[in-house]
Amino acid sequence: MVNRWWVMVMGGVGVWVRVVVSSWVPGPMGTLAINGVGSLMMGLVYGICLKKGLSVHPAITAGFLGGLTTFSAFSREGVLALRASWVMGLLWVVGSVLVGLGGYALGEWWGMR
Image 1: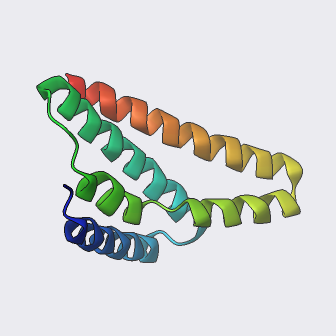
Image 2: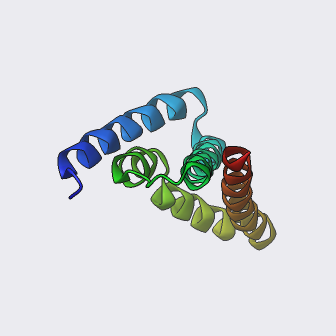
């Protein structure tokens, strides 16, 4: 059984890292960077585990990486961008999703090597 305590602790660590990174790169670009790096890290973890036949611990994925990445900030920034300009808003939303998917795919490929 998963020790929920570790998931909670690692979630707190992920949130703390997000706050620190957001202070260096504030606003939408900070959210994009955090979500891109978090997706890359998620892919890397899964790629390594797949290659070695290991199971992924939820404290790393749901905990740390779940606390690090932020769908709510992405959603808010997407709505604000869409209100300002449909074109820029759509570019922001599609670009953010592509960064996340690309980051995960790159991480998994890297982890499987």
